[in-house]
Image 1 (cartoon, rainbow, N blue to C red):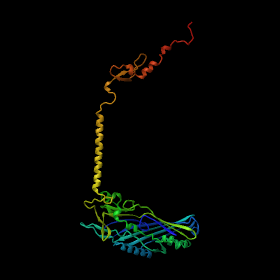
Image 2 (image 1 turned 90 degrees about the horizontal axis):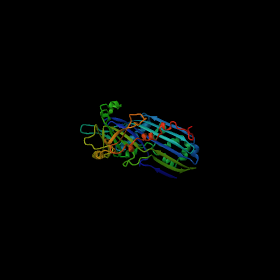
Image 3 (image 1 turned 45 degrees about the vertical axis):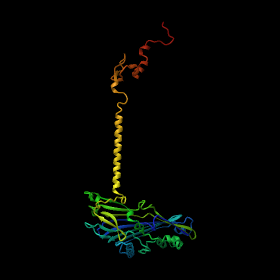
Image 4 (image 1 turned 60 degrees about the horizontal axis):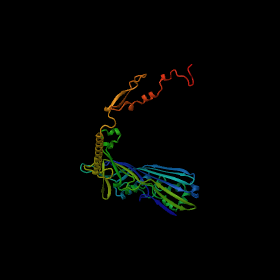
Length: 407
């Protein structure tokens, strides 16, 4: 038996976070999505092939905060948030869960998806005043749960649970192996987002909301008159490292050798804050200090603190380079103009009429030749040459065939 784990993060699995926060509001709706695909390889046949080949089914669960299972999930998430040093709490939660199996001739695939839509409250540590920015708690973002979460009789957090429920014979083959250990890893796990420092996220602020005609863009009234500062995690960079999908393999032998593979995308997050946000720390926990506008003298850029003076310097160098190119082009043009007339000087040409010979007819076409002692014979028209070479009509008039004699 062997267990092979390949991944780019110290956390077990990935998650996707989406949030937009009003610093001084009482609460904010956020969204967490967890997805995982499981592949059970039975290319050598065996009991798993007999049980799963050709099988298809779907399991769905959807519930709100009134459900006892959802209340249990809220309590466990809030305990995890508290353990991470955050004062925020989840006060409402909607849950969607799905698991879908497709059995093929050599393997079976099970796709899991959990969408949590919590209402986050108490994240505001301090409201904005003239001399102090708002303080927004960000230590809550590692939403994770260990162990089973059962909603309406269906366990949603451990992948092995749905196999045990829907395919008990297949479960018996997997039970007690490294395959079961792999399938017992929590799906609800956002520790990778928590563990990536906010200073490593990319950030960009959008001033569209402060435009006079911002309403024409269909913007929400809540951001009217403000900039929106967005922090994004999940792009490959020197700071964040190479972001790739995570893959976990487990190979075990029962009646045949089988391989179970779990695949997830890299962690990603997108958090938008209304106002200009700067990263700060309180008691070791990360927070956003938020003001309606950028603080005076701020030199931060979307590059994560790349000095603004360097950008100005690069722009100045580009301007100097453009001036140098224009100067060199001007000098080259003047040098070429100083060479004077190129080719034949028109003042040295004189007109010469053509088609004026006997038997011809005069046209408006003329020719030009160089002034001087050069004779026209040297520069005459090719048409005149061709005309001379043509036999005249009078030269053949009255001629007799060869061998004839006059009588």
